[in-house]
Image (cartoon, rainbow, N blue to C red; front, side, top):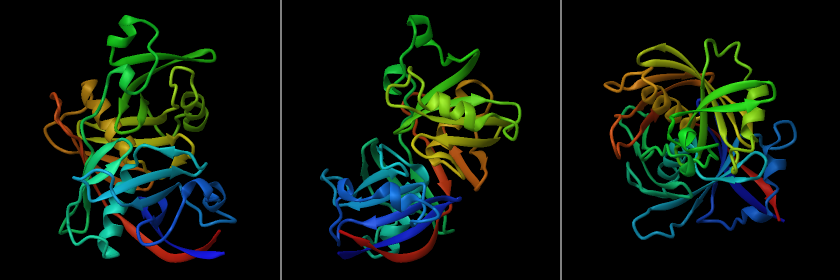
Length: 285
């Protein structure tokens, strides 16, 4: 049995077990990730973040994300900020901006002088096949909003891929929104072949929203960076938000600033805080 070093971090309460897979051996396929994620008997986290050497010549690192249930996913925005802070604080890189290879595409986190981290989250994808989402017909495929049948009710969702799939629902009051009931039903809806993250967005003003996110393989989290990006893109696309200034996204765990210009190939920019909680070791193999 060996000791595996890790760091516990969080971004607005969305918490992570971060592992340096460059300077120590770690095989996620043999690791008891779901057991480690347990909050009463393990480390406790929403996602495990793994730093690896890049496979692409232009990248500084490879970034892999595993949900609390052990499933590997494409992207995690709050995790990306913590990733950038981790590699800088641990001396893995002296760069303030790095190029990171992920399963959802290349991202470029940047450490700001004020301590916040800004991440270029790339271009949002809106076409059903890019989510992926199984539209019921050609008219549905051309629409920005889709009608999902959930039991005896119909729910309008706007689908965005921010490196991982999101379905955004506009609600009157997120405190009263059926986040857990609808989140679980939509996450596993047959029209989302790879499952989906579900965001519940309340419009407060043209540049301010409240948001709760039910993440696939995890459940509701305190914050979701890609979910915040998806919600802002959905709000702007629906004409509910302006794109001339950053949008303030208020999540249960705190605030993110999201910028996106509604034009072809425009990138989404996310800015927010990170926090290291503690360093630890755990028995491994």
